[in-house]
Length: 108
Image 1 (spheres, rainbow, N blue to C red):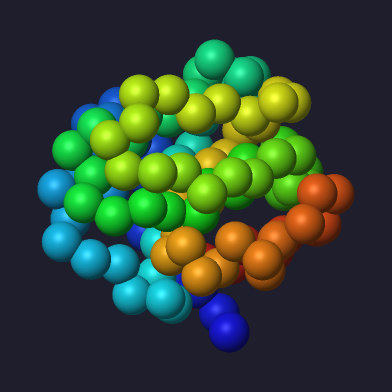
Image 2 (cartoon, one colour):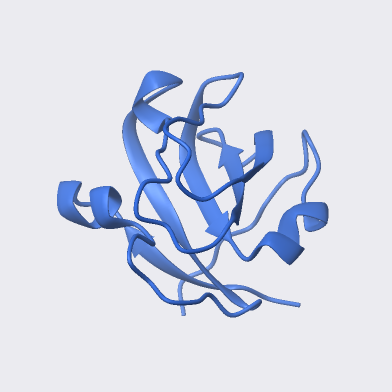
């Protein structure tokens, strides 16, 4: 199943992310673009979230470097390895991604 991703590459769009959204369909999510790549720069918070999400961190070559099931209202999640992109997806999608998988993102 494909995922329809909304690109977040501005400060405000990345800060807002999925906050205050009421629900997330299984086939939708967002991709946060973080430059420069790193661990601190790609950390996320779950404040004001109404639901848990699957979080997948990708490096600059779109390889999965970490993933987690992020719980609502938790203060901090960070990748164990440097990343450049963060996929925030429906929790059911967590098993779709494994460490070192190559992910292909396409523009519609």
